[in-house]
Image 1 (cartoon, rainbow, N blue to C red):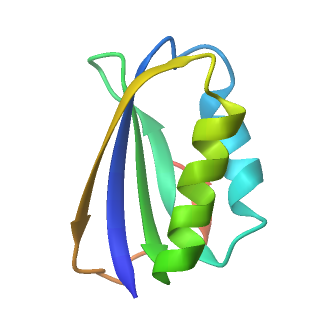
Image 2: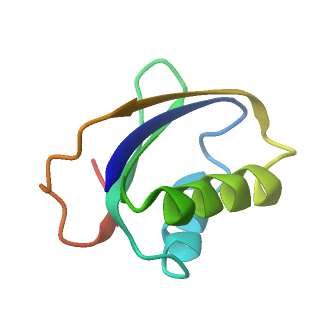
Length: 89
């Protein structure tokens, strides 16, 4: 298992980005959350097998491409803190 944190920038708040991401995550075996950040970006934190995470990230990027200007991704050790996938406040 791995953990990836992806930051999306562009017109990503107020367009249903978090709700769409949560819905898309149901098709993958992943755990994590998605949240709005104060600086206008959206943060996706996701844990699981690499191919499941990559599938989710690619699907989000494809589905929301008209709103995303840029995305950055970092990988770290999974913490196991998530039991499902949710929208964080």
